[in-house]
Image 1: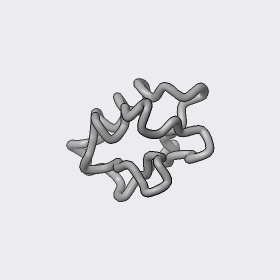
Image 2: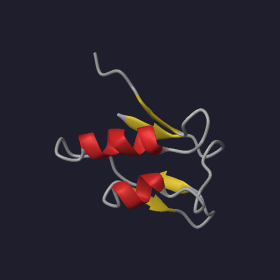
Image 3: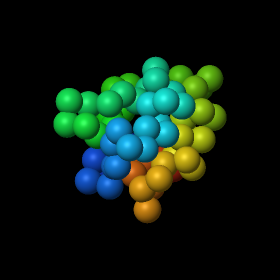
Image 4: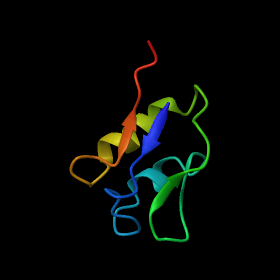
Length: 67
């Protein structure tokens, strides 16, 4: 499961997540990214890439361990 911490999100100046996986992330009315649904198995690699490309430090996106 992926989560996004809006307090860390840079929003529109970054855009790494919603430009990488627009079927999972979108730009919210507050100018910050948001997850509007969890990725399908097919979308997980792109969602992980968005997490790596996130310009916030530390990244605003995280993935919970599913074990």
